[in-house]
Image (cartoon, rainbow, N blue to C red; front, top):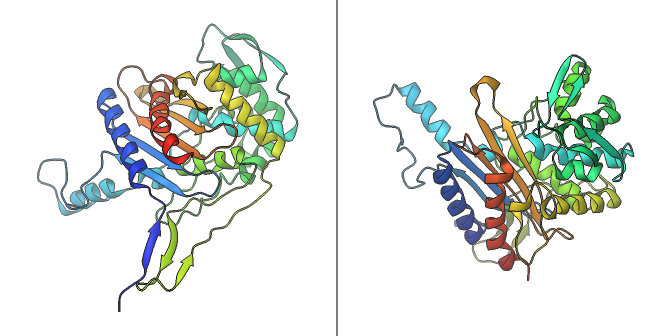
Length: 360
């Protein structure tokens, strides 16, 4: 008895684009690994997912590392090689998470786009001096400029205005504390402070994407709700099942939650994130002929003393009505390690390849 045919959302062309882009930047930056996801932010169909270095599906037991290993060590190496890090591993998102903080603040009404802030290059929180990446400071800037500049002191202030209970209510609304429900096994759940343990310093660091971890797919899914008008979608690979004789077709459906954020906040965030590309730190994510929104990120890995970083950029287009959202993570790049410098160009490359093909 022949089984059913399963149709999946992976697009061979987009997967190939993503694999080429990952290999190229990994080699250029001599990085430990590169992860890429490309997805439809409206319905959660995953078009491409890359974990580079990748193993050969035709030789799944061939370990790249040379040497003689014990059975346990060999199994550990294989399990590590087979892991889908986009889904099964967590990382500190850094400034890409500022999308969540900004969305929460606009939705809660604690900040307006025209509110002004002052950045002297740091902000004191209790006894901690928390630096901005621009140590000389950004001076006086509006909230929108604070997002464009990825200014930590602005986000620390915004996080304090939100307060822990309100911030957590939006973090929960955006699904960040739950698994996405993707239709493959092994999904990691976010590692987050318990709300009762969040003091002023924890709230400050969380506001700009540090001191907690989530999976790349979790971040991409939550941001999709921000830019698609407020619907929390379920990312997935499965599209439909079809019987061998093609007489029975079952379209697969996935849960959605509407009204996660208001249409107005969604529109505002799309405009702000587009301005990050046109006027701010995401300029290298731009694509000629298309409106692109993006947010860059650079997170320092633990222990902080190791001076190892993950450079990332999350981007989407067309900015006014997104058809594609993508995230790129470059783990332990050598030399320049800022997301805006090395990950944003990969987003530009992916969108340049994909948009003419997807957006008719």
